[in-house]
Length: 142
Image 1 (cartoon, rainbow, N blue to C red):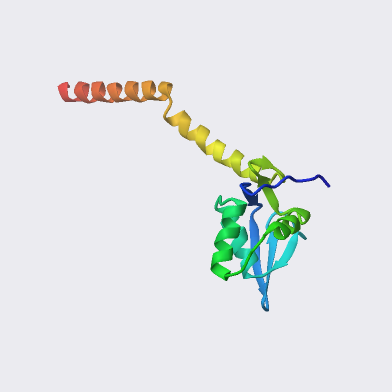
Image 2 (image 1 turned 30 degrees about the horizontal axis):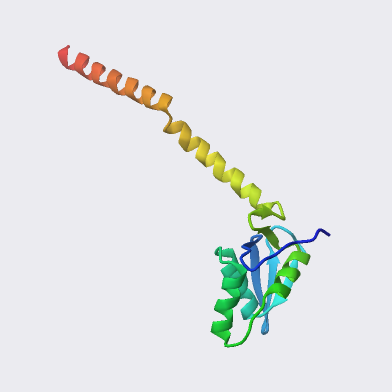
């Protein structure tokens, strides 16, 4: 297993997760990886949600410390998430490859949109517009 370097200003993102409840415990698992899950509580779930929104590690700990009125550290949670392969990236460095699939699908749509709004497409649209006007004028004159 490779070592991870996490700092107070690190930004951590998880893989897409699925949440289920078992009594007072919250089961957090991977949608894409069967068998990867952890047991947590409300504070852990809130920490994961804040991290996935782009908050830094220190900012998340500060918010949770204020909310729960106790000193909160989430380094243990991060280590557990890492051991269960539920971390996608740390400081924009890919750990698990699932989000790359989403990037490819977004780039496919981006390529299609770029095709319809490219310079050559505008020339084709202009040609079709002028042709339609010419045919309309020709029909009116007959």
